[in-house]
Image (cartoon, rainbow, N blue to C red; front, side, top):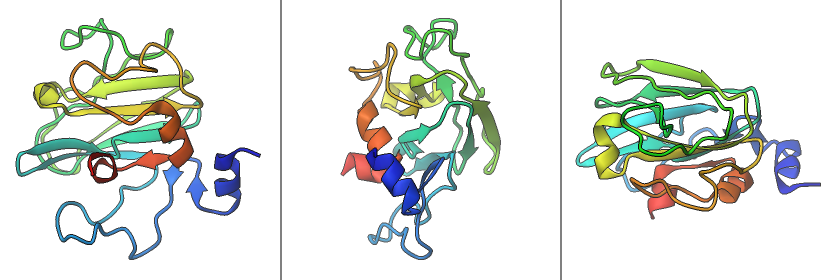
Length: 175
């Protein structure tokens, strides 16, 4: 039995990622977001001089939908695909549909994308790509052109680490 299956059976993971315990999701340092995003939700955050996706690494099964939600600031969730002017490389699986939320600025605004092709997807925020606002989603299992290297504009967790953990928060990754 795979580690993920054991964690799912034990109720530690849902199909969309990590399940937090009520009252136990605080970072403890009084800074940053104190609540974990709901399963299959990636928050887009501006905090002081930091711009990031949280979680920065997310696992989903094929056919599941991710909701990208503005918590603060102006952001986009944009796949690295050569069809998109802001991307110089393709870092999503071959045959996968690309995604681009466009820049959103209202707190609570959302963009949803369903991931129908297995593999590793790297994405970025158009306004903050130059300061390293990037993220990674693994669908089903790691694979494709993003696997084994980092996006050109920042760092993300390795694909297998995302699969093993289900979700990797920005703070967890940057500590």
